[in-house]
Length: 219
Figure 1 (cartoon, rainbow, N blue to C red):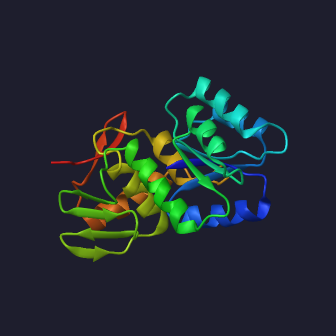
Figure 2: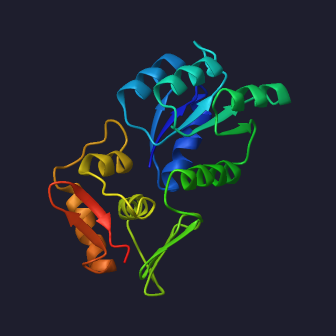
Figure 3: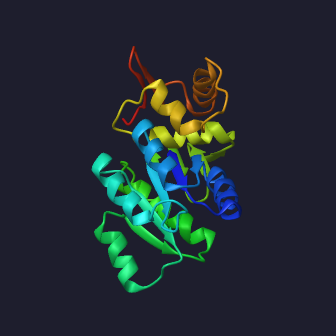
């Protein structure tokens, strides 16, 4: 999943980026509202974490403009404004959730998992398809009831496929969920990850849809 983090506090942003990458997300970061709106126009994103206290634009104004461009894009607000009126204003202007600073990282991650479930086919942290089970909270994968060790991007790819089990995803869609801006991606990197997953989870679990992309075998 590709997340845009809009946060001007560089220390907090670094902590969030580290935690979210451990969680299996692809993270891109900007530090002001102008860059955020440019990224939202130019990029295909799955979720936005938006700080309201930005140096150039008010976060609520960014949220309002975001909603005109991406009405369904999930948005989690982060803010030091913790009054009831501020919370209501954020939600009324289109935020999906609201978290006041300071916050505990486990709560942020739990709220993100809940937002992900709203826009995916998953209904809980544990996604089971056929003989494969993936726990997004514990980062564990089981195949035929046995634990399977996956590399970080193998896990990210499997999660992206299983969270969208009813859709076929293109190479570009999947690469966007595996790599952040500026990361070098070799031409066959995705195929290598898929090859490794097929060796560990069975050759038929990930299906190639010719000239379209990839999906999981949900039968």
